[in-house]
Image 1 (spheres, rainbow over the protein chains, first blue to last red):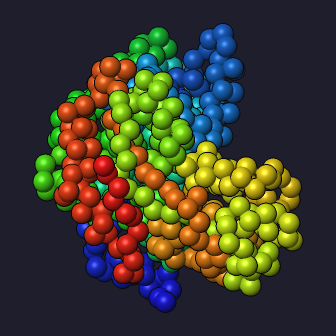
Image 2: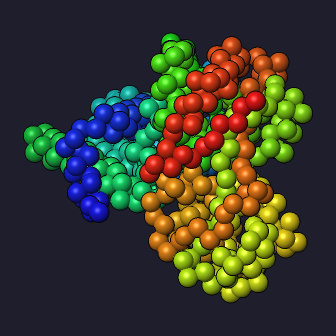
Length: 231
Length: 271
């Protein structure tokens, strides 16, 4: 029997269409979820850092705690929302890639919000007088603060990507692991494990890890390049 | 802040609307909630392309334990359920969630266990006697423990043997057939499995079939259309077309022609 590394290499070299489809779907779902979570989470986190309102502490604690939300619970909540018997059932989204994007967004959002809040609060403390002397209001300062914190924020975004690409509980429940439609890398690994195809399961794991490694290397390289170029 | 919040809500709402538009444009398909045994054995991979070529309708299979598959049907999240636990299926129809149950095919359960057979199961000639031997021996038993069809069949066997399985020897894995077999191979422990999953299972370790052939191990599969009167969005026409096809000569032949390692796994039984 071939070792898992040989199997993994063989699968990649053969460019097996089913595998390529699974990889494509995994990347599409997770990257879309990261984008949506950033679009909501970056401004929300910055606002949370700068705004003062009653109950702010509770909101911060809530988002911090939600970073530990078990994926299967997030999946279950989204499942109950999207199920035909649930409040959003008419959208007919259960067992679709879009449902998986929604579930992963729920998982990533707290990470993006909490890390953005922490990064922006630190920078604001440091440059508050400077920014205020330039006449920038809190709200107007947000883009500047986010830009200044971009390297730290990138780490948060990568943490979010990692959480989403590695999880299986949520996408299994809301996606249903339908062959050719909602089967991702992690649900395929679960399926092959349950079929006793441990070699193939490990091979898929190796491919998933390689993808994550590549993406992180690119992000790190881009960060270094931006730092060198922009100071 | 209020402005930010309003934008966030707006973004969320428009995102959902976009997602809905996305999925509305999809081609004709039905969703079938079925069991891990049919999916893991590769049966669907064999018969569904034939059905799709015949009708142009795509079948999306969500494979779950029988209990979960019936719950998916109850909530209206599938058009058809295709499972193996007759009592639960009949209750599903009686409660009005399903239209009618049809026999499709059967396979059988086998009891697997460590090859050195510490409980002496090979010497027994009925499934109930096999269970009694396992419970009375210093040996473990790995149970699905997940309300699946296989778990229901296992509970019926314990009941027939007059045994309440409990204690350190009784391992309730709460997971699918494959995961339970992986556990049984490691312990090693005895386990009840459907023959289809067993034949296509790759990680057997020391496990072998130790008991088979008792008529009580017969494992019939039924197919049921989710009741469109209960859930108006059910694709009754296409769902019924799938049921009609699988009960037809073409569908029954497709099932009979599926083999793993030269062995036929499922035997057509449509009336």
